[in-house]
Length: 140
Image (cartoon, rainbow, N blue to C red):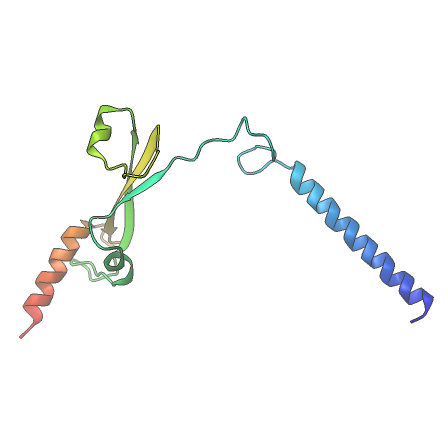
């Protein structure tokens, strides 16, 4: 390689390195999605813990195909959220788990099935009973 090619490669290497360092610098001083700059701990909001209330087996909910009993389209999973403060009187009605140290607000999500066509809403238990009835009536 002659000296001109070596100089050209070195210049490109330096240019790429400078651009990379500039991007890293800009990424560190730019605010994130919440409007906080990195290291600005005063404005960081606490994430609210989420607990899912699923009275049926998770594999039954997510891996089995469920059809609407009215229009036969595929049911989608939806959730209803309730925010409960751990210090409120209604907190005793919810299971916070044995090994959790959740204090303050906790989001409890109760899952159910919703038909995207007819908007029929069925709990996991209701659809399980309907599917068991359908299966037992189809057997000879």
